[in-house]
Image 1 (cartoon, rainbow, N blue to C red):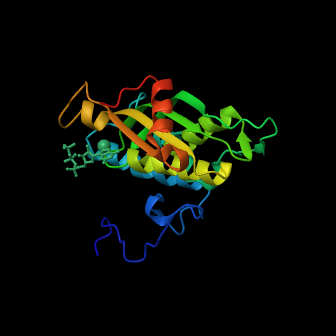
Image 2: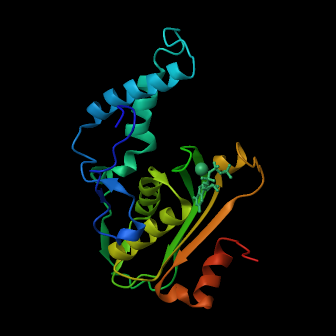
Length: 225
Ligand SMILES: Nc1nc2c(ncn2[C@@H]2O[C@H](COP(=O)(O)OP(=O)(O)OP(=O)(O)O)[C@@H](O)[C@H]2O)c(=O)[nH]1
Ligand SMILES: [Zn+2]
């Protein structure tokens, strides 16, 4: 095998071990053996090669820092959510006040990356649940969305990862997640459709019933027609 061909023979895939395999992000078993600093150093070398291959003069003042900048951005920012050690602490509380109706966190800013093109996905997530015995700090819902968004993603998987994690954390199936997002791979290249956006909706428990779903959709002012 030539040196620039990726050897996939010994790549094994693992995922988030707390959720079903089919919705896990495909990861190598050695995904976190290297430190962030080692990964940044290696990605820097690879990205410099990409720039050189494109014909760019890497010694130019403006370009010389780009390989390191991109490598750091990948590991520490855009894809920080790949590493379980970065998962936010989702502290929950006893539902002492006995709140049993819908709780909605809407317009959660969403910044993600498309795993097919490594281009941005931007939009909003709307998350709601109907508590049983546990409730959660509001900001934790935003933090969880941010965590799963900061991986190479497809929107369907992102929606499901948020849903199943919240169902586990809140110990209730009654969770609903909607993502409305623009994919730059659709709007800025390829078909270049500037107007279309993508909606995904996943739910369980009481939200399987239209009445509860409608309550959520009305509250976020969304018309699914
Ligand atoms: N289902 C799904 N598809 C996505 C998502 N993000 C990007 N895609 C699609 O992934 C597909 C990849 O298809 P390919 O035909 O291999 O790639 P391509 O030649 O760049 O396709 P075009 O975008 O049509 O030019 C494209 O249709 C993308 O629009 C996502 O979140 N979910
Ligand atoms: Zn894409």
